[in-house]
Amino acid sequence: MLMDRKPIRTLFLFVLFFLPVQYGLVGLVSLSHSEPWPAFVFPGFKSVYTFESGSYTVPELQFLAWSDESNEPVEISPLELFAGIPRSQSQGFLRSNFADAQQTEELAEDARIWLKRQTETVVPGLSLQRLDIVWVENRYSFEKERGELHETHVTESLSFYFTPEQ
Amino acid sequence: MNLRQKLDNWIFGSFQVSSGGLGLYRIFVSLTILFFLVPSPGIYGYLAGLPADFYSPAPGPMMLFDRFPPESILMFLHYLLLISLTSMLIGFQTRWSSLISGLLMFTLKGFIFSIGKINHDLLLSVVPILFAFSHWGGSFSVDSLRKRRTPLTSGTDYGWPLVLLGLFIGFMMFTAGFPKILGGWLDPGSQAAQGHFLNQVYQKGRTDLLAVTALHWNHGLFWEALDYATILFETGFLVAIFRPRTTRLFISIAVLFHFSTMMIMNISFLFNFIAYAAFLDWPRVDRVLSRLWSRITGFTARDERRGLLFATLLALLYSGILWLDSSGVMPLESDLRMVEVIFITLALLPALYGIARFFKLSMNFGQ
Image (cartoon, rainbow over the protein chains, first blue to last red):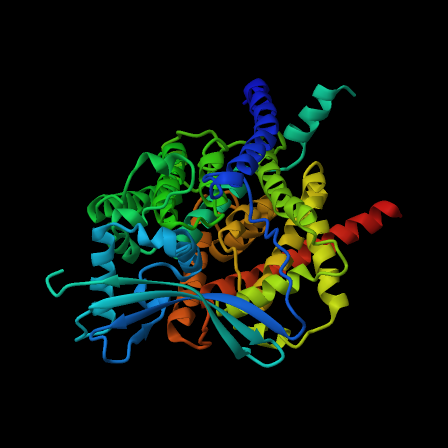
């Protein structure tokens, strides 16, 4: 059975033209937005991290749940609060949806109530009155296994208040 | 030789395929996706319950939606995916089932990635769509039993899907290497790979396998050598794809590369192995299987039922891997799965064989 080569040759010529063009578009769009999808690209890991000798700084997002302002808050890790998000995507999810206090403050009412319900599911018996979202930078030493926490620096924080009816 | 002849030689003269070999690859792809790479159905209910504010699609077609669809729709698409993959496995309406499998995988992944983080597993959808136009339903299939396909004889004319897949992989690898050059990975004063490794350990808690040990490898020269080797490999891929032997060499090196990143950074990229496996010498695998089948059963080596033997052996192997995964023989703390560790470690065998074969052939050629 003979095969018609012409359409396949045309397909190859199209792909040879298309691949660099779409890569250029990915670069352009990524300047102002997140990386487009789908695209024929692999992750570039372009960034070169610089760190002081002997230490390494890691940004972290903390969620503090208050049932009564006079009590101590309960700290909930993002992995617990968003347990349904695949772990490989959890950091990206947090970066996209909790980039900073200004963006997070714009969360709609239903999203805030969703956070309340999730918090109360993670901490059974808790009646949430206030949820603090705190952006911190942790400085670790990487000389020792798993690192040793040297310093925690709070960069931003935001509080959501809830009524018992919500 | 003019440009068109060169192009034709590349497209239609690079890779030897056979109907049996393509059929075995189809079985491999279908079973590997069904066993390990289909999205977990547990995620659909969670996504559907997320508020619209958390629907954060990447720029692209998923922006046509303004929130996650209901769980029932996602589950419906999931079951359709399982049906189409099974249909692809048995070779029933192979072209359509392959196309539908690729498109459904693409759609479901699109929603899963709309939580604000994409993964780069596009090849998982590309392989079934691309090979829908090969003759991978020509053997070991319901279609071949119903004489819907004429089994093709061995030849390189039908190897063009492999060349195209190689082009996609080579280009995508280049897009991984090129930004590293721009980002300063080649600067001897910065050990970029080490920085990313520390990021994986401290920020993502990826501390399995050799990760904790590698924390003590504080030699700048070692990490700088990794920076250079990574860029050389990723950008060199785009040149390698124009010759079949170097394509196979770089595919083998890719397996070693993923094995190393899995051991140190706990990143697996298992989905890419579906695409890499296309470059195995499947016609040869089929010949070995034919001889084995003939010896065991006494049937002719052309008997189509040897495909069933291959599918059964592969399904048994995969079931064993899943059993090991669930038994918790080696507990993992990161998001790496035991399945990925075993699969990628097993993939080292053909990869090392491929590298040894390349150098043996090169030495023979030199003599």
